[in-house]
Image (tube, rainbow, N blue to C red; front, side, top):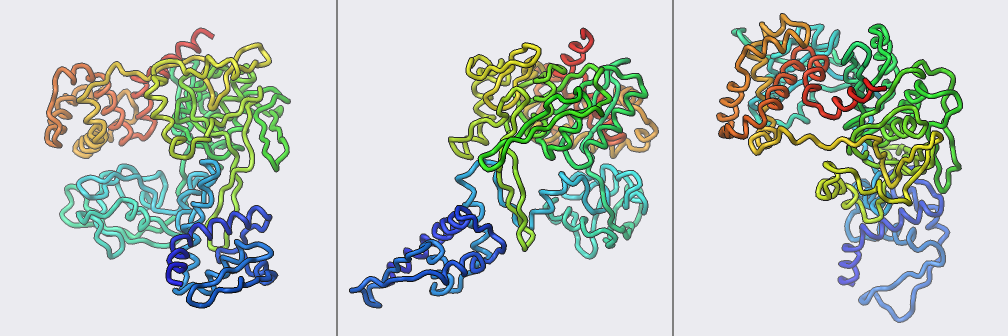
Length: 555
C-alpha cells in the first residue's frame, strides 16, 4: 500500500493535468478554481467495480465505467493521506495544461492579471512618476504632467527615501516591490518622504493616487519639411486615439510622407492596428482575416473613413515586431500601399481569446490564426516546442539573418502575389520589401561592456542630476545638444565608467565615439524633455531610419 501511495504522490500533478485536459475535451469549461466543482457531477454518475483478490494490505484498483480521469481526481480529493491544497495544485497544473499547446496560450494567475492587462488598457492607478534606481535609491526622472506627484510638488531629481512607514532607500529592496507600494486604487493616499539636493531636511508628501496613462505613441515629429515620423511602442485601447492626435499634429506642419516605426513593438490589441491601417487604405480593401478550427473565417475590411489615403507611407519593422504590428505592416504591404523596411518580423500570428475565472485569474487560449490579405499566415512554426520557439532569435543571429537577407525569401513555396503583382513572402513573420542589416559600424568591445552594464543610461542620469538647473532652461533638442557639445561629455563618461570598473580602451573608444556620444546625449535629452528629446538625437545613428528617409525622398 505504501508503494501505491508513493506512486500516487509522484503522479499527482500528471493525473490532475490529464483530468483538466479531459474536462476541456468533453466541453466542460472550467467555471471555478476548485477541482471539486469541475468533477463532482461526473463522479456521482460513475459506477465502480473492485477487482477481486486484493486486500487492504496490497491495495485495490478502481475500474470506472465512465470517465476514469474525473474519478481519479475525486479519489485524490477524498482519500489522499494528507490534505490536498486544491488552489496550490491548480496554480501548478494550469501552466502544465497549456505546455503542449502553442507558445501563446497562457494562464495568468490572479496576482499577475493587472500587470498583464495594464499595457493593453492604457492606464494604471499610481502616483505618476518615472524613476531610476541609483545607488540603491529611487531617483525621480520625470513626473507625469498634471499627474498626482507633480500636483503636490515632487520634482525630477528627488530621491524617495520612505513609502508610508517603510524605508525603501539603501535596503536593497527590488524596484518591482517599490512599484507595488506606489501603485494602488484610485483616490487612495500614499505618503512619500523624499531627499532633495541642497535641502537640509527630508520632505514629506501625501499623494492621492490617480489613473496614470500609459502612452503607446512615443513620439511624433517632422524629420524634414515633408516627412513625419511616428513611433508606436505597443497597441493598446488608447493607441488609435494617440495616433490620430499625432497625425493631426504632423498635418499642421504640412506632412505628406510618413514613417511609421513599429520596431520593438510586440503587438497588443488587434483593433488598434486595423483602425490605423484603415486610415491608409481604400474602402473595401482587406486588412486582415482570421480563421480557426472552430472559428469560421472573419474578414476585416477598410472603410471610407481614411484620411491618409494620399500620403506616402513607409513602415519600419524588426525581429521584435509582432502580432498587431505584423497585421498593420502586412496590410500596407499586401495592398501595395507602401513599403516595409527593416528585418523579418517576429512571426506571432495567433489569436487569443480570454476566459476569466472567479478568483481573478485568466486563461488566454489561441482560437484562430491571422492571415494577411494575400493569404500569408503570419505565425511561424512552433512544432519543435516552446523552448526552441523562443530561442529562434538566437538562431536567426547565428545564421546571419540580422546581417543578410532572410533565407525564407528564397523558398518558392512561400511566394505570394499582391494585387499589383509584387512578390511577397510567407513562412512566418513579415518579410520587408527593403532589408536593412543591423548597423555594427560603431561596435567595439568597450562599447559592448558599457552597454551591457547600462553605464550610458546611468551616466546620463548622473550628469542630468548635476546639471539640472542649466539643462532645464532649454526646451528644444537643438538647445540641449548644443549645451552638451560644450561639456566634454565623452571624457566625463570615460572617467565615470572607469569608476564603475570598465577601464578605457582608447582604440575602441575611437571606433565607438559617435555612437557613445549620441546615445548619452539622447538619454540626457530624454531626462529633460522626454521622448521629444531622445528620438531626434538618436535618429542620427539610426541606419534603418536613414534608409527610410532616403527612400521616401525618391517617391
